[in-house]
Image (cartoon, rainbow, N blue to C red; front, side):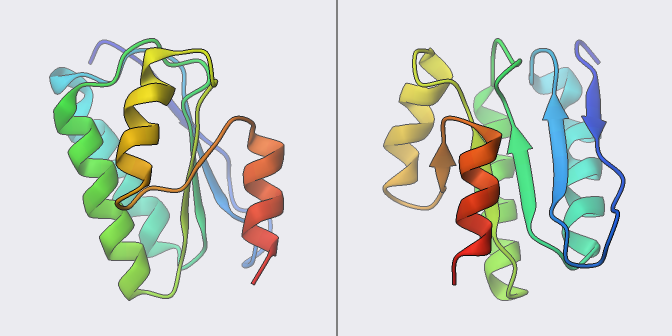
Length: 117
């Protein structure tokens, strides 16, 4: 795997599961990324994927985000993706957002959005 995936431990049942991506999300990291997303969605809480420290996202990993979005929607959960607005990742995800993903420029805004009905 070319990057490291970090996630916060759940403090309460209602707290979102935060996945902090600290390096590239490429084909080599896809199996680990998929496992972390599955762990997060099986926790039964909302999920935040923070890409602010990520420098590259492979198309296969974007697809995994879209599949996760579909999965959480069926489970009455929400997925929020965080990305810096001045990056190529943000631009690409912004195009996809119109179809499926919810994208915010900071984790604080993502947290606030999850508190809204």
